[in-house]
Amino acid sequence: MGPMGPAEVRGGLDGEPERPSVATVLVVDDESMVREVVGRYLRQDGFRVDEAADGPEALRRFAAARPDLVVLDLMLPGLDGLEVCRRIRAQSNVPIVMLTAKGDETDTVIGLGVGADDYVAKPFSPRELLARVKAVLRRAAGPPIAAEGDAVRFGSLVIRPDRRQVAVAGRAVDLTAREFDLLAFLAAHPGRVYSREELLDKVWDWAHGGDGGTVTVHVRRLRQKIEADPERPRHLKTVWGAGYKFEP
Image (cartoon, rainbow, N blue to C red):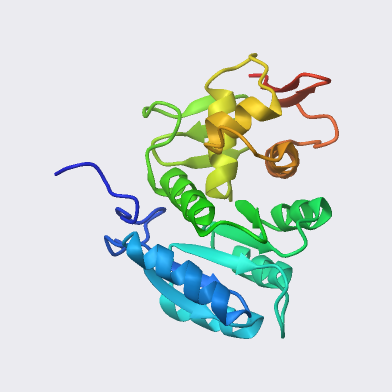
């Protein structure tokens, strides 16, 4: 069998049943033109597409369609994108790409803070959005960055790259696909300092044009989940003026 195509998803994670070979994307936007254009580009690339025009409908379609990824507008009637993101994230780690009409850095940071994996600011190129969708799905469904094998232990922190699982003090830690990729990448290179731009390139596949604030938010979220004291992290260290490193 040949390599997996951009719109294909293999078996489920964490014991979930096998997913269809073609990935389904739920596009949530109150502008019908945006849904039409984005949907057309996704379908042309082989994706299945489901749609919703407001927050409540988005949650209903999410429950019914079980999409592999959600493209979610920040500004929605009925229930805004941040609240929809929170509610989806409370029950699933499905990748979420958020759209923001304002292009405002504050909105971006807030969106990533509630669990979005990526964002695209409006107005955007449909090709750019398609590239982001494919990159996020590749990270979520593809092989982990670290080599497969036995569990890697750092004190009470345990990383299982082959299963994409993390535990702290014997308790499973619920990470998004991007959070796991960031942790796995840094842990695979202990002691080495990476700038935010390097991490965008290595973990996010953004060769240029990425927002370093994305990395900052993900590091903060990871610290809240794996560090005993996020304000005085043991593993995820900031090297001021240089970037971040993992201390084993």
